[in-house]
Picture (tube, helix red, strand yellow):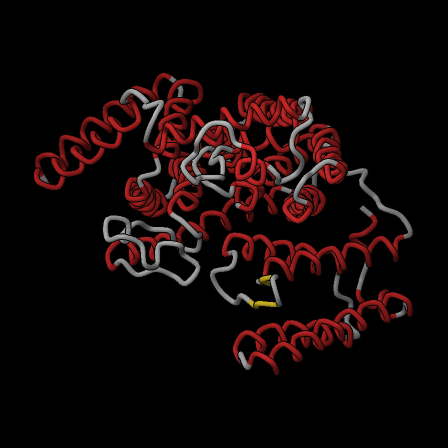
Length: 491
């Protein structure tokens, strides 16, 4: 890639680019100062101010600093900020809430544009997963076109912006994460975020206190001890746990260090406990599906035998050592499983509401000739045109139904092919990999994507859950790396 040779010294000699960067930082810094004066919030303005000053400092340096490296670091920071979301450092600017992710991603685009201006062209010869990115681009274009018939333009624009941000992160991950070191860094970053959220979840579960972003503040006592960490509700956190558990299991399976495996087992146990405390039945199903897929398709016969034996011994040890705790835990698990397998009510309760939501979405799809109601408009239609009573619930709580109703049958069919193709390619790669880091990463991504089928029907805001897009970004970056490697181009 030519862009890897781009250095700050070269940018400093390019007058147009220097003017562009300085003006950008000046505008950002001015907005921050203006906001700080009117709001009087010192800490938040100080943090953003430091970032702006850091940018100006880099511009003043005479030493050669590779811009590509800075862009990659900025992408890592964007991903970390995406995981954290609006839990910290949120700035209210009128109806818009700015937080680090929404600031860093535009900066990433700015640096990317600078590279193109300097190079004179966009070099994407190293990208070997273009059909996947082309589908995402077509989906985005379709969303923009749907503005023509979307009844709520504001909801449509909001949805399109979220989709654009998601597609941007996926593109940048494929573009910048080009070697095994990058992929390994992404993997451990995911685990690091999980490790950071677990203490917050335990604190919530034990005290009933929550971060300001949580929707559980002021909730009934029966729900107050559910963990939500940096997310708005327990279902979102449960979805994150369901997609993260395969990363822990793969770590335990492929890292030989006793210490690493011991820590991994503890993190796995606590993650399962917190997942149980969220009462998110769809994510219970997701984890059950993950374990079933892992045991059936990825474990060899010897591993299956060892798993059964060790699992039996572990249960026996718990029964003998902690009979009371084991009995209570078994009772809780039994109740939750019964809530999943019991007959569904078609007339009342949350399941009945969800069924009516899906019925209405299919009716809306038919009324729009299969083209969908337009980006982000299904809730507007649910509020104004519903046929089956949803008792005030407007959100579908089902990613698949939401995608179909909003974007129509063609986009939905394309997404299904996109999703299944990634799983199929990962499984194909997994079969011939050895037992190293790459197989660990491949297994984690494969199992997590399988679990996504159920994990995605729990949250009410799956479009805005950045970590699910990070999962697809990671998977496509991994596929791109292996295709380059197969062509002899991986570094």
